[in-house]
Image (cartoon, rainbow, N blue to C red):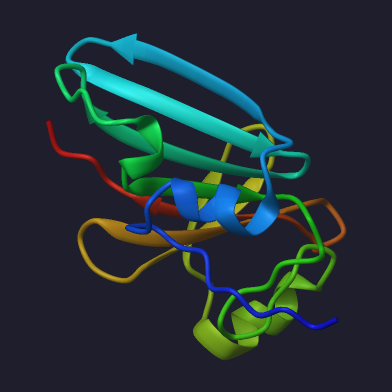
Length: 136
């Protein structure tokens, strides 16, 4: 069965559970004035943020980041974990490069929304991240 569902920032956290089921690790904590929720489905993590005073169920919170290390999901352009980063570079250019534990190429859609490709030493995509900057 070929099921197509779009996951992204701004969707309700509940959408992940509606589609992927309730077999996930959930971490919820407060940092300062924010309530942060992470739901990890194996190699895919959805994160949501709300004010600590927000009493809604966490499933109602908007997703502000998605971290994907699974080859089963792809970007709207078709890129997946395991693909060559060179294909991304040919389509979109280099992106903003940063170094940490791994090489990361970030593409900004606007001042608050981005997509990053974490690449190993052989130029293979290890992780794809979607992020929305949260202004507090």
